[in-house]
Image (cartoon, rainbow, N blue to C red):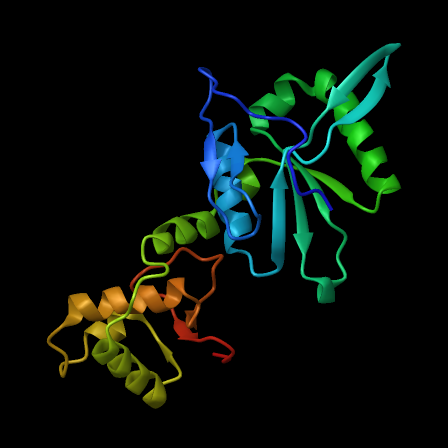
Length: 218
């Protein structure tokens, strides 16, 4: 398991670089593109993933008689009970994959070989897999995550779910007995962000999204 980056990412005038603060690594993880940053958001929110490390290992290989090196963008580790191999992942824009196909393929072949020999799997993902409704939902919910909830509003929502297993945000705030709809909706988003309530994360969240209690079927 890789704990520290094998390659450091410095400032770059051509792309977005920065740090992602995460609870799934002992240190903040560096990204060097907006797409990598968005990918980290997906990894952070995925309950099946317990750890991820950016720039985890440098792979040395030979290409046409020359010594080369390649560092995948991230290593991902899953909950042990899932019995899934960890992943080495390269994050690339689709256009770059097409434009630089010949230059990238030897790197990716070396990564596949390394992964096979060391108990990993290797994959390449693009904006097609990253910039989805799931990412939209995560970014929306992140602004509500980890905040203190109002006890009175929490009780109102709990009472509603005791009466009805599945509710939409619109159903909740349209209840004529409530006069605090804005605060109630805010508390609802807090509970969803903190996974007390849940929904289909792969469908874009709206006021008509069906939301239910965690560990409860619709």
